[in-house]
Length: 96
Image (cartoon, rainbow, N blue to C red; front, side, top):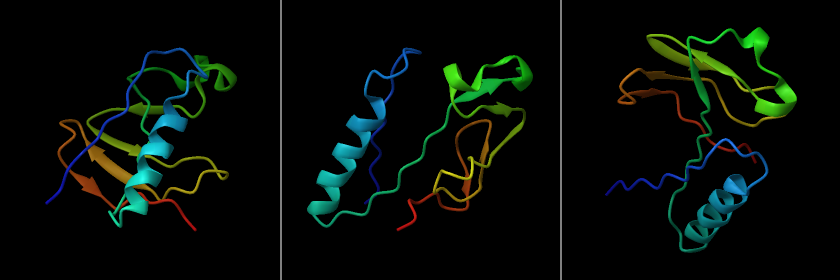
């Protein structure tokens, strides 16, 4: 049975959303549950050249089909997400 847990927050950087998500995911793994983490921070039809990477982190500009390829220091694989959040093509997993 598939279950989803979403950790969301406002635009305030450094509030601990990633730490909370990682801690919850690790506690699920300790209970032998399968965990896949996906970090998506989409900006609908925004020019990425105007977004400060220090303030916004990795920027993914979205259109009809959402594609993202995180930076070299991230351990996700490439995936496509449709505009209805309905389809994931390519699983995103942390590399070990």
